[in-house]
Image 1 (tube, rainbow, N blue to C red):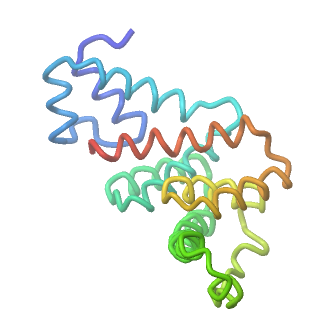
Image 2: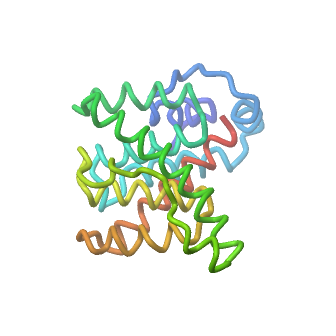
Length: 194
Protein backbone atom coordinates (compact mmCIF):
# COMPACT_ATOMS: atom_id res chain seq x y z
CA UNK A 1 0.00 0.00 0.00
CA UNK A 2 2.79 2.44 0.84
CA UNK A 3 5.86 0.85 -0.71
CA UNK A 4 9.07 1.46 1.16
CA UNK A 5 9.24 3.30 4.44
CA UNK A 6 11.03 6.15 2.69
CA UNK A 7 8.06 6.48 0.34
CA UNK A 8 5.69 6.66 3.31
CA UNK A 9 7.50 9.70 4.70
CA UNK A 10 7.65 11.29 1.25
CA UNK A 11 3.94 10.66 0.70
CA UNK A 12 3.11 12.07 4.13
CA UNK A 13 5.04 15.27 3.42
CA UNK A 14 3.64 15.55 -0.11
CA UNK A 15 0.10 15.30 1.29
CA UNK A 16 0.74 18.64 3.05
CA UNK A 17 2.69 20.19 0.17
CA UNK A 18 5.92 20.02 2.15
CA UNK A 19 9.26 19.25 0.45
CA UNK A 20 9.56 15.47 0.32
CA UNK A 21 13.23 15.69 1.34
CA UNK A 22 12.43 17.74 4.45
CA UNK A 23 14.63 16.78 7.39
CA UNK A 24 12.79 16.22 10.66
CA UNK A 25 14.43 14.56 13.63
CA UNK A 26 11.42 12.50 14.70
CA UNK A 27 9.94 11.78 11.27
CA UNK A 28 13.38 10.71 10.03
CA UNK A 29 13.99 8.49 13.07
CA UNK A 30 10.55 6.88 12.78
CA UNK A 31 11.09 6.43 9.07
CA UNK A 32 14.53 4.84 9.55
CA UNK A 33 13.17 2.46 12.16
CA UNK A 34 10.36 1.38 9.82
CA UNK A 35 8.10 2.35 12.70
CA UNK A 36 4.41 1.62 12.21
CA UNK A 37 3.42 5.03 13.60
CA UNK A 38 4.68 6.90 10.54
CA UNK A 39 2.34 4.75 8.46
CA UNK A 40 -0.52 5.47 10.88
CA UNK A 41 0.24 9.19 10.73
CA UNK A 42 0.20 9.14 6.90
CA UNK A 43 -3.19 7.40 6.94
CA UNK A 44 -4.56 9.76 9.61
CA UNK A 45 -3.45 12.89 7.74
CA UNK A 46 -4.74 11.61 4.41
CA UNK A 47 -8.10 10.49 5.79
CA UNK A 48 -8.60 13.72 7.74
CA UNK A 49 -7.87 15.90 4.71
CA UNK A 50 -10.32 13.87 2.64
CA UNK A 51 -13.18 13.78 5.16
CA UNK A 52 -16.58 13.42 3.51
CA UNK A 53 -18.08 16.60 5.00
CA UNK A 54 -15.11 18.86 4.27
CA UNK A 55 -14.36 20.27 0.83
CA UNK A 56 -10.71 20.42 -0.25
CA UNK A 57 -10.81 24.16 0.44
CA UNK A 58 -12.33 23.65 3.91
CA UNK A 59 -9.71 21.03 4.77
CA UNK A 60 -6.71 23.06 3.65
CA UNK A 61 -7.98 26.20 5.43
CA UNK A 62 -8.64 24.30 8.66
CA UNK A 63 -5.16 22.75 8.41
CA UNK A 64 -3.71 26.22 7.78
CA UNK A 65 -5.48 27.54 10.88
CA UNK A 66 -3.95 24.79 12.99
CA UNK A 67 -0.49 25.45 11.52
CA UNK A 68 -0.83 29.18 12.29
CA UNK A 69 -2.04 28.40 15.81
CA UNK A 70 0.90 26.08 16.43
CA UNK A 71 3.41 28.48 14.83
CA UNK A 72 4.55 25.86 12.32
CA UNK A 73 5.94 28.40 9.83
CA UNK A 74 7.13 25.96 7.17
CA UNK A 75 3.76 24.20 7.20
CA UNK A 76 1.97 27.57 7.05
CA UNK A 77 3.89 28.44 3.87
CA UNK A 78 3.24 25.07 2.24
CA UNK A 79 -0.47 25.15 3.09
CA UNK A 80 -0.84 28.73 1.84
CA UNK A 81 0.67 27.62 -1.50
CA UNK A 82 -1.68 24.64 -1.59
CA UNK A 83 -4.67 26.85 -0.75
CA UNK A 84 -3.79 29.34 -3.50
CA UNK A 85 -3.52 26.46 -5.98
CA UNK A 86 -7.09 25.53 -4.99
CA UNK A 87 -8.30 29.07 -5.71
CA UNK A 88 -8.22 30.52 -2.19
CA UNK A 89 -7.88 34.29 -2.25
CA UNK A 90 -5.55 36.43 -0.12
CA UNK A 91 -8.48 37.91 1.82
CA UNK A 92 -9.53 34.36 2.79
CA UNK A 93 -6.01 33.48 3.94
CA UNK A 94 -5.90 36.65 6.02
CA UNK A 95 -9.28 35.86 7.53
CA UNK A 96 -7.99 32.46 8.67
CA UNK A 97 -5.00 34.15 10.35
CA UNK A 98 -7.28 36.78 11.92
CA UNK A 99 -9.68 34.14 13.22
CA UNK A 100 -6.83 32.16 14.79
CA UNK A 101 -5.46 35.31 16.43
CA UNK A 102 -8.89 36.29 17.78
CA UNK A 103 -9.51 32.80 19.13
CA UNK A 104 -6.20 32.90 20.98
CA UNK A 105 -7.32 36.08 22.76
CA UNK A 106 -10.78 34.69 23.46
CA UNK A 107 -9.54 31.27 24.54
CA UNK A 108 -7.26 32.77 27.18
CA UNK A 109 -9.87 35.27 28.36
CA UNK A 110 -12.82 32.89 28.53
CA UNK A 111 -10.75 30.09 30.11
CA UNK A 112 -9.86 32.59 32.83
CA UNK A 113 -13.53 33.43 33.35
CA UNK A 114 -14.43 29.75 33.39
CA UNK A 115 -11.65 28.81 35.82
CA UNK A 116 -12.44 31.67 38.19
CA UNK A 117 -16.24 31.30 37.95
CA UNK A 118 -16.78 34.56 39.83
CA UNK A 119 -19.79 36.74 39.23
CA UNK A 120 -17.61 39.86 39.42
CA UNK A 121 -15.46 38.74 36.45
CA UNK A 122 -18.42 37.36 34.52
CA UNK A 123 -20.31 40.68 34.74
CA UNK A 124 -17.49 42.89 33.44
CA UNK A 125 -17.75 43.38 29.65
CA UNK A 126 -14.98 41.51 27.84
CA UNK A 127 -13.86 44.58 25.92
CA UNK A 128 -12.42 42.48 23.10
CA UNK A 129 -13.45 43.73 19.64
CA UNK A 130 -14.72 40.94 17.41
CA UNK A 131 -16.19 42.73 14.37
CA UNK A 132 -14.54 40.20 12.05
CA UNK A 133 -17.10 37.64 13.26
CA UNK A 134 -20.06 39.67 12.01
CA UNK A 135 -19.67 39.21 8.25
CA UNK A 136 -16.77 36.85 7.54
CA UNK A 137 -15.43 36.52 4.00
CA UNK A 138 -15.49 32.71 4.31
CA UNK A 139 -19.05 32.71 5.62
CA UNK A 140 -20.39 32.48 9.14
CA UNK A 141 -20.61 28.67 9.23
CA UNK A 142 -16.97 28.14 8.25
CA UNK A 143 -15.72 30.95 10.50
CA UNK A 144 -17.50 29.33 13.45
CA UNK A 145 -16.16 25.90 12.45
CA UNK A 146 -12.59 27.20 12.36
CA UNK A 147 -13.19 29.00 15.68
CA UNK A 148 -14.38 25.71 17.16
CA UNK A 149 -11.34 23.76 15.94
CA UNK A 150 -8.87 26.33 17.28
CA UNK A 151 -10.76 26.56 20.59
CA UNK A 152 -10.67 22.77 20.93
CA UNK A 153 -6.91 22.73 20.33
CA UNK A 154 -6.42 25.56 22.84
CA UNK A 155 -8.61 23.83 25.42
CA UNK A 156 -11.27 26.47 26.09
CA UNK A 157 -14.45 24.69 27.17
CA UNK A 158 -16.62 27.82 27.07
CA UNK A 159 -15.49 28.68 23.54
CA UNK A 160 -15.89 25.09 22.31
CA UNK A 161 -19.42 24.90 23.66
CA UNK A 162 -20.37 28.30 22.25
CA UNK A 163 -18.88 27.72 18.78
CA UNK A 164 -20.30 24.19 18.52
CA UNK A 165 -23.81 25.57 19.11
CA UNK A 166 -23.20 28.43 16.69
CA UNK A 167 -21.82 26.29 13.88
CA UNK A 168 -24.81 23.93 14.23
CA UNK A 169 -27.19 26.91 14.12
CA UNK A 170 -25.60 27.82 10.78
CA UNK A 171 -26.37 24.39 9.32
CA UNK A 172 -23.35 22.23 10.10
CA UNK A 173 -23.95 18.60 10.95
CA UNK A 174 -22.36 16.91 13.93
CA UNK A 175 -20.42 14.74 11.45
CA UNK A 176 -18.89 17.87 9.86
CA UNK A 177 -17.98 19.23 13.29
CA UNK A 178 -16.47 15.89 14.31
CA UNK A 179 -14.41 15.64 11.11
CA UNK A 180 -13.16 19.23 11.43
CA UNK A 181 -12.04 18.70 15.03
CA UNK A 182 -10.44 15.37 14.09
CA UNK A 183 -8.52 17.16 11.31
CA UNK A 184 -7.31 19.71 13.86
CA UNK A 185 -6.21 16.97 16.25
CA UNK A 186 -4.38 15.00 13.57
CA UNK A 187 -2.60 18.07 12.20
CA UNK A 188 -1.49 19.01 15.70
CA UNK A 189 -0.12 15.48 16.15
CA UNK A 190 1.81 15.84 12.88
CA UNK A 191 3.21 19.24 13.91
CA UNK A 192 4.55 17.74 17.15
CA UNK A 193 6.87 15.54 15.04
CA UNK A 194 7.65 18.15 12.39
